[in-house]
Amino acid sequence: MHLEMFLKKIVVWFICFFSMVSCYGDIDFKQIEDYTLTPEIVSPLIYFTVLPNKFFNGANIQQPFIEDIADFRAFEDNTLRGNVVKIVIDVEIKNEFDRSFGAQIDLLNEEGEVTYTINRFAIPANDLNYVHPSEEILIEDNFNVKDATKVRVRVTDSSARAIDVNDTTEFQFKSSLKVFLELGA
Image (cartoon, rainbow, N blue to C red; front, side):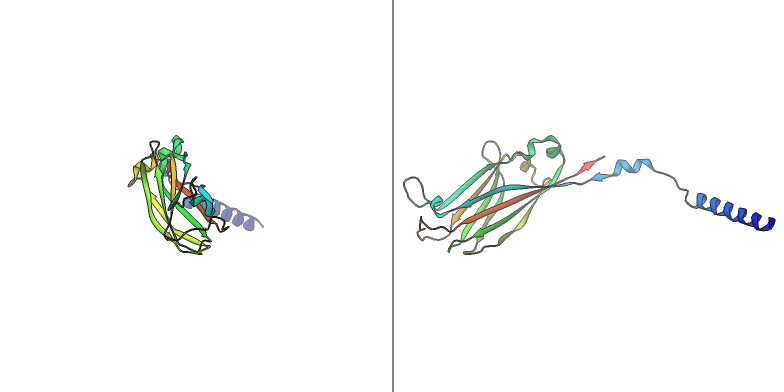
């Protein structure tokens, strides 16, 4: 009986000893200094719906394009402005018109000067689910993007045909912005 108790105690002591020794290692608290947090923020950018009558001015003359300008104040926040490394712009369009359109997106500074342009792209006629490839903007290559305070979208009628002002077809433009930040410890 004494021998069994003695052996059990020795086994317990060996297990405790080896578990402490085998789990021992230097703890490096400086690792936190190298840690980088990389959050992503997604937000709507610009949205509008255009009916045929929007292509006509006050004198009822058809215009070749329409334009929408919206405020874009994301970079007024100092944390965002100082830590943004990349932005991605996504665009979805529903074109019920029987004609194709061209679209161009410009980011503008306070003076209305272009800080970045997403080059003109074509939206086919009757395309109800057009998705433009994501536009990735690296801040280190396009530092002026952080000066943007407005977004301008210009939609151009690619045909020379007259538009029926009473038609009810729609052109719907939706876009979103994904901001990638890099926050060091």
